[in-house]
Length: 217
Image (cartoon, rainbow, N blue to C red; front, side, top):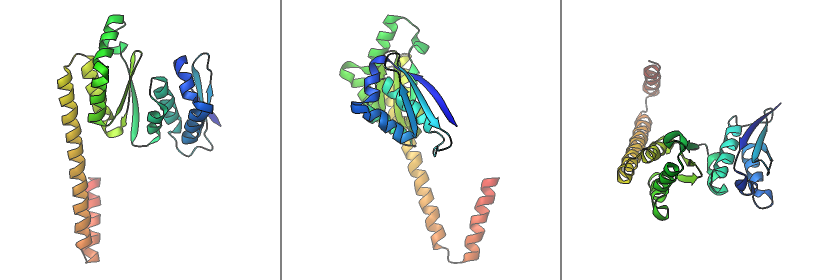
């Protein structure tokens, strides 16, 4: 049994999605176990997946997001990152925040990109993410753990926060996230070392089962 999912991208991005001699299209298909049917005239991309041969249940959504990312201005190399389980993709519609005014959309795009791309570069370097401002959308490719933070920072910029305020917000939130993860890692290492030091098997068994009971509560 096969399933299909339709994605529509700008016609001018079709050539990028296909790639030289179809290389980009083939790589997405290989990564996600899908088949892409591309209409170069309309921009319609049909993603076909064989459910019986599927190994990864989220392959369809990975293929969808890779196609969308390329359609919204990302290079194929950056879009391939979405195949990594630790990475995610998000797409913001600028009209949802500033309406349909041409001037407002132009102004907010300028705020997000900055002079010579400075604002976008700072956000990318601070968060380790990739940002694409394309047409009236903003695409984000980032590690899952930082995706929500980057999105929040971009929304702050869109809605009028000062650049310096947003830079500080991103720096602090990313630092807090890394600090929390470092503490978690150290805690896990110390717990493993404590268990290694125990030579009495009865005591080791008691500690393990007591810990499981606490987690259930």
